[in-house]
Length: 119
Image (cartoon, rainbow, N blue to C red; front, side):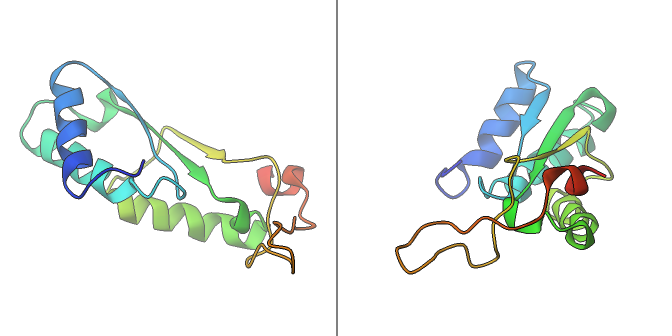
């Protein structure tokens, strides 16, 4: 999260070298592609297999509508350059409208029930 250019990739590669296997990504963190590149490099180097890693990402709150979930997940997989995620969560249990600010700068919740997102 908020890492300098190139440092996230190096940090993930170092983490794999010292035994870390759990990687947490999210739309909000903007670390998916860097994490994925590092994981792919370590897989190609033969240091680890994808099934040895546990990769998590999260559905951002503006994508809670059922019609948006699959595409958001597919975009995550493309960004992270992996065939699958081990866990895909809703980042928060409430959705936001796409442009989530009212006249006072407050986030506007969507009317999508998180149970519909989950289904």
